Amino acid sequence: MRKVILFALWALSLTCIDAQNVRDQLMRDFLKAGSNYYAYQGPTRKLTPAPSGYKPFYLSSYARHGSRYLIKEKEYDYPYFELEKAEEAGKLTNLGKKALRLLGYLREDAKGRYGDLTPLGAAQHRQIAQRMYDRFPEVFSGRAIVEAKSTVVIRCILSMQNELLQLSKNNPRLIFNSDASQYDMYYMNFQDSALYKKRYSQKTQEIYNEFCKKYAIHKRAMIKLFNDTAYFNHEVDAFELNKSIFKIASSVQGTEMRDLFNLFNIYSPDELYDNWLQANAFWFLSFGCNPYNGAQQPYTQRNLLRRIIVDADSCIHRSTPGATLRFGHETIILPLACLLDLNGYGRQIDDLEKLDINGWINFEVFPMAANIQFVFYRRNKKENDIIFKVLLNENEATLPLKTDIAPYYHWKDFREFYLKKLDAYVLAP
Image 1 (cartoon, rainbow, N blue to C red):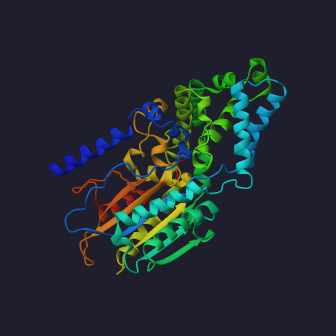
Image 2: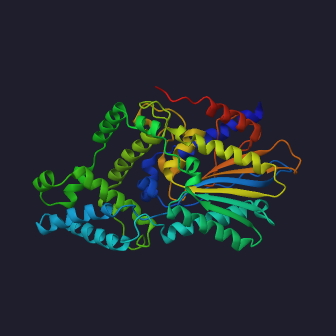
Image 3: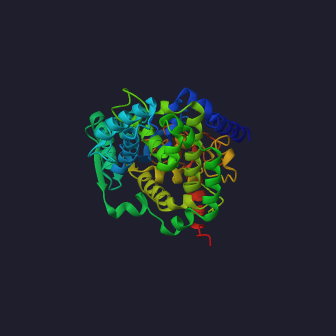
């Protein structure tokens, strides 16, 4: 009983850390306002030693690609040409002129690289691989087998390549089996059309629009950029232009331009927070347990979770150590975290005002290069009681399972709980 109580206190402490006031977090690191563009920072906490006699022997992960350029050319062109047109009409403030100049630099830098992995994105995955090797050397010892799968998107393939190259640098004897094929997309990047049709229900859209109106900052931003209120009221879609500028501002941190300037200085700390609030609400409503669309969107990743279990069951019985590494997207890793209910991200929250104070904070889950790692331990090869822990972005995370060895769990308990959950899934009417 005492161990269970200690586990509950440990889980509560992690939730309190994550649920600290986001406004305060943004004051310390304004780049977090970029949500899914936040550049990966690595682990922030030390790992808890395994129970006596247990050694790691298998690691299973799903990781998002590293930092990238924006995906479409028009994402750079639209705000640039809107401000250029205003400049030609003499309607920009000095700050607006500066923003136009910086947008031009970024637009030129991104030409021909739309959606590509940046050098920082590649470095993020090399660093993750190095930490995996340093933290769990037994997993990557000798002729361990590393199975790697990527979605068919080049930034994901290159993220995989950078991790494998870093691992091979540490141990040239490793055996690698890597692939990126449509054959695996049914679980690596499953697009569930039935659930997608329910995602943006009328009620969801109403709730989101009302929330955005309350925290709208686009007119405040336009007043800083334009010297003529009538001009931006009649000639500009202020909401869309602000959203586009904020997206580019968020992405700068992942490029080689990050040390030269930032576009976030267009916004005050309160405006950064309000922009983030709108984005956080969007990601929750789209991929979390949103009660206004049936709260089933995390089940888009049911194939992936089932595959994680199947792969682990298979690899547990191998005589050699090894790893299964998977590389994909934030639209996969976020609902997977919600389906697992990692750190409470699977909760239904019916009041968008309470998302961040309840610890539903998007950048804690899916920064660029975000990853979920399951690390398996045993005392010997005949061990029946396999234990594991789960890491969210390389920090120990909680699951909705009872355990007497927190932050570790018994694999048999995990299998039973989640297979039952998956088997019980039925699309709501």
